[in-house]
Length: 315
Image (cartoon, rainbow, N blue to C red; front, side, top):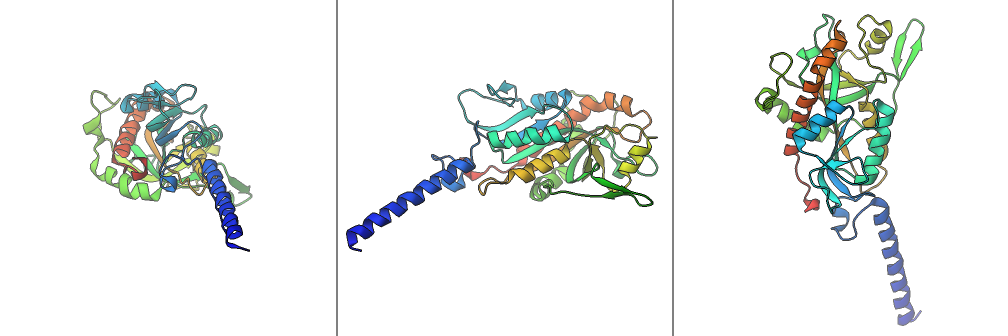
C-alpha cells in the first residue's frame, strides 16, 4: 500500500467512526450543538432538569401553586413557568393518567423518553402506618411529610399454608441515596414546615415534621382496620412508615429507563401523610387532611428542588 492508498483508507475509517458516533448520540438523545457527552441528553420533546409527578387533583393543584407551574407545553401533559418557544426547561409538572403503579410506570417511562429529566420527584399523599398501639410509627401523623429511603411491593407475595405471606421481589431502583444524604437529611434537620405554611391552615393545630423511612406500595386503598386481608398484607412490613399506590411504579420505570449509557435518572418520593391506615375513621381523616397533606408535601419538595445543585453541563 502506497502513502495515497493509506491516507484514503484512514479517511474512510475516520468517516465511518464519525458516522457511528453520530448515530449513538442521536440514539441517546444527546444534542449535537451542546457539549457532547458532558451535556444532559434531549428527549423527543426537549429536556427538563427536574420533573414533578402527581397523581390526584389535590396533589397537582398544590404543586402547581407552590412552584408556579401554570403554563402548558403545547401538545403535552407537562406544565412549566414559561413554555413558549423553548425546548429546555428547569422544572416541569405532570399529573398521571390514573392512580396505581401500572399507569404511573407507563407515564414515567414516556416522561423519560420525551424530556430526559435528571431528577424525577413523585409528589403527593400517602397513608401513615401504625404500631401495635395504633399510633403512627415513629410518631408520624397527618400533615407530616415522608421522604422515602426504600420502596417495597406489598402485592408480590407467595401464600403458603402454615407460613403466611412470603415476600418476593423483582428488579427496581430505590430512591437516590446520594440525594437523600446530601439534601433529604439536611432538610429534615433544618426545614420547619410550620414556618412555611403562609396563610394555609391545617385541619388541626400541631407541629408537622419531616420523616425519612421506607414506604410500602400496593394496588389497594388500605382503609379497613378490621380487614384480615389488610392485616396480612401489611404484616411483613413492620418497619415501613407509610403506604401508597404509585411508588413501585416509578421504582420500576426508572430501573428500566437506564437503557442508555448517557442517561442516568434519579428519583425521589415525597409524600404528605393524609391519614393513618389503622384509624377507625380512616375515610373521614383522609378527606379532611388530603389537601393540607398535598400542600406540605409540595412545600418540602420545593425546598428539595431549591437545594439541588445545578449541573454545569446545562449552562
